[in-house]
Length: 426
Image 1 (cartoon, one colour):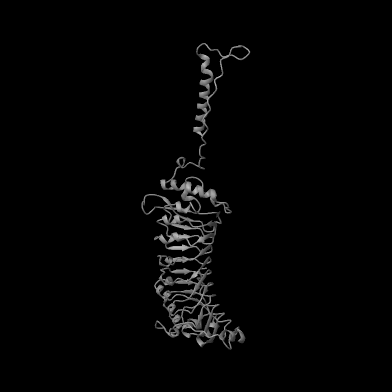
Image 2 (tube, rainbow, N blue to C red; image 1 turned 90 degrees about the vertical axis):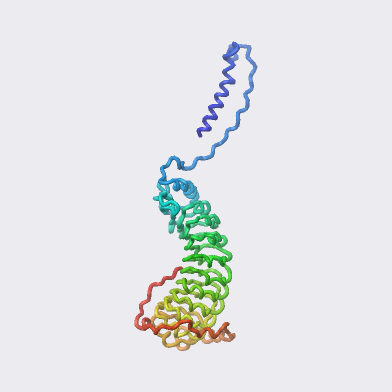
């Protein structure tokens, strides 16, 4: 604005010299046309240079604000730009994003960065449940160099995940679940060695999941409820995750035998509502620390392997809605910590006394199977139709093997009807 005023003053000053200065030299007297019949010839004015428009000023100039640290001054314009991109804010969150005290903006948290413990920087953002709407996060979180944690569950953010997030050297938790993101799997995370928590569930990501993600040092990998379509990768068992959720996608193929290699880490595995086929691998019994395994509503077939009787910490085991058959192994029903064993909607034909006791206690669900003299089973015709076609699994001898020493039978299921609260992470 100041440059514009100076430029106009220069124009006026220029005109003053051209028009008025000749009036004071060489005896020239300026009069109007009625007072003199002799007038000097008119001197054409040179064209004025075009005005140069100045760029618009930012909402507030950081230099005029008093920031607690220069690092906060640097991220202030980035936050203001993102605020202007938000198209819906029903809870009035952005009304607190005013002034220089960024650390008190709602959803923003400051801390000392690892490279300078005396500095103050924007370290984490928690937008969970804010219901904010914006067409993209590109140009926002990827421009916050000290960001260590970003949670944005249950908003209406969309677009793709910028590959520039790979430059965030301190980011260890990324949660963009329950939004409207699309496009391919955000491969930028594959190079983020600091990342330990990745949650992209309940979005519209498509394509395949790169197998390298199962080699990452992640504690949590939630990619359920997207549109991923691919065969379960053979290196699934290479994961170091404690919690692995692939549910509600379109994963196909068998559960890889490598799953047993994850025995030192996996606590919870959710594979339900996919298109997984084949027989349950014997190696699944190696997950000795797992408390939850859910592969319900797939196309698994064959008998239950006895190796599942080694899952002595298992609390919830779900294979409902598959094509399993044979006898339910008593050794599985003897697991002392089970609170939910779901085997409904299969084609099991036999069940022993220990398993029957679990049915009475509400722990075991065997509805809609082919077990005679048990309530709520499939019709004889439906069962007969299923067994018309011969069925088999590779390595049938492994289904009777136990890779562990079975502990003495627990009486917990026989004396208590109490069940623990579900830890289902969907």
